[in-house]
Image (cartoon, rainbow, N blue to C red):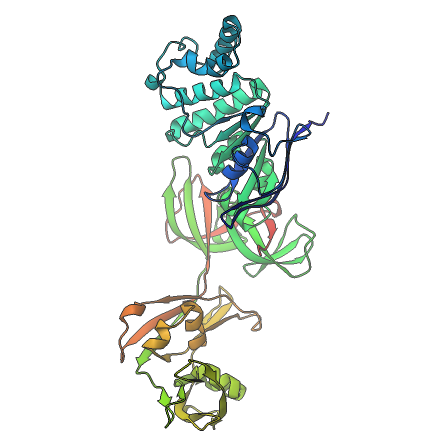
Amino acid sequence: MEEKTLIQFRNIVMNFEDALVLKNINLDIKENEFVTLLGPSGCGKTTLLRILGGFLEPTEGEVIFDGEDIAKLPPYKRELNTVFQKYALFPHMNVYDNIAFGLKIKKMSKDIIEQKVMKMLKLIGLEGYEKKNVTLLSGGQQQRVAIARALVNEPKVLLLDEPLGALDLKLRKEMQYELKRIQQEVGITFIYVTHDQEEALTMSDKIVVMKSGEIQQIGTPQEIYNTPVNRYVADFVGESNIIPGRMLDDYLVRFDDHNFECVDYGFAKNEQVDVVLRPEDLVIVPAEEGVLTGTVDSVLFKGVHYENIVETVPGTSVTVSMRIVKNNEVASADGKEKISANNFFVDIEDVKLLDDKEVIARADAQAWNPETDELLSINSVEYTVKEEIGEYPVVFTTHSGTMIQRMIYVVNQPIVKNVKANEAVMAFNFFKTADELIESQALDTDLKTWANAQGWKLSDESEAVEMYVDYDFDIENIREGMSYKVTFSTAGREMKVRTVNYYEEGSEVGLKFGKNDIHVMKKML
């Protein structure tokens, strides 16, 4: 028999002072479910809980409780209770009176109150503690009293807002099992808010993973862990090796320059995807037996297993020099125009690809009105460059005749090849002024452009490889006449692998996994 849907969030939107905290939330919660709202701070999980509790009214949407819209119903009229991280027990009352407080407000008879309180004390394992001062209880005991105080009112739903956050690790783990036991015994719906993935996986019937006010995935702990829908869920729930790949066909994915059978389907042919391999699903074997090979970079003992970092794809890098030159702008005779440009390098094989637009871009040539900073067009670019190593002048001129001359250096630029990674990278030395660096709005991107840095697959030169930038200068303290190193590199690949055996750092190993260990996900937008 299918369980009844008790709670329905329909198109919930929440704004706080023009900040959109919840974005069109739709969620169904069934009777007697243990549902966990999981996500980082600021994702909207507590806001959603407070809307259900009646402490906040949504900007838009409906909150259906047992068939009735309760969005405007005050908290005391809702058939639910809340347990907060700070238990808010009454310090002047003993355990019995704390639990009985709500019943006394309802003016129940003393014998009924005693019957219900003693039942709760038995449920939470605190029989004999009824006369004890709550301030003398341990954190775990105080938490149980707070839960009993909420449950004694027999709500249909118990809301728990990170109630284990104040406990130490050992007690927190114990209380996870205790909470699940209590929920199963009382047979009501628990809605639990946490940022702790272990809590969610341990206790929940259903997990709702949230990010930036939106639901990313809803599923059982097994579904969330084994079949995450995107990189965010895979990264947030458990530890993952996430690898860019390409879906060649149903049940066939390509990553790290190998084709692998998998159990996933329904993707477009050659669709770019993310591939998940969990650390516990990888097995270290002799290098010749592995479907992938690598080098053990580090080993960390974790008590019951070793955590190995295995580099399967070495990164590729190239380092160039950035020389800081004086401001090289030229002003027109009447001072109404200025023009600037830089010398630049070009590989001998790329000379034939040069045109006016490419030369302007590589020289970062620009003209402007110094009074208004309005950019002016460059009317002509004059140069003659041969496919021979050497230095060639280039002249940039505005429509009004303001001109600047710079040099094009034709060089035989070496390419750094990485056969194991099936990739190559290249970049050029370049010239810049201090002002150009300071004024850059996206320095990493500009450095790639200025150095004409590029990476590609050896097996297919049309397939680009993403590159990252590292540099050794402080942009606020650069000096004219100095050269600074800029390194462009590909990411490489490191796999986290859990083993019971120790493997020595630096050893060459193989990694083995089956098609059921591979999970393919849509790329996040």
